[in-house]
Image (cartoon, rainbow, N blue to C red; front, side, top):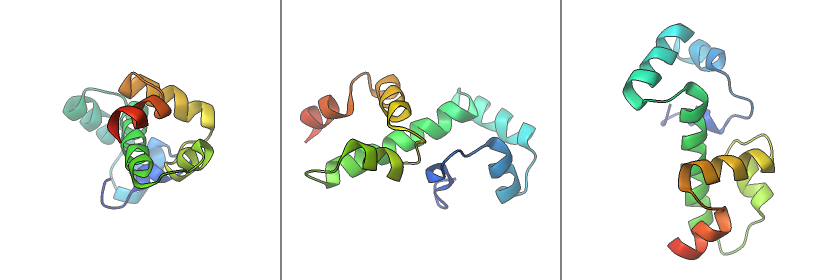
Length: 99
């Protein structure tokens, strides 16, 4: 998942991953749930947020819509909602704290 950066694909589904890695979707779902303690969508969105954090640290100014898009989120709203869910703060608050 990390090496191929599947998580950057917009509208990625567990079936997409299943087909790419050649494993049934039930196995993938169970594996993620057991290993990481979360659902497939939370796992993917958590990885997207981590990618977004790297983009935010690398650049002085990029519009959030571009960060969201480059991180695989389907909308800016989804990006903000998930960023807050996994960091407890907005992207701009996170940048102020970590740059």
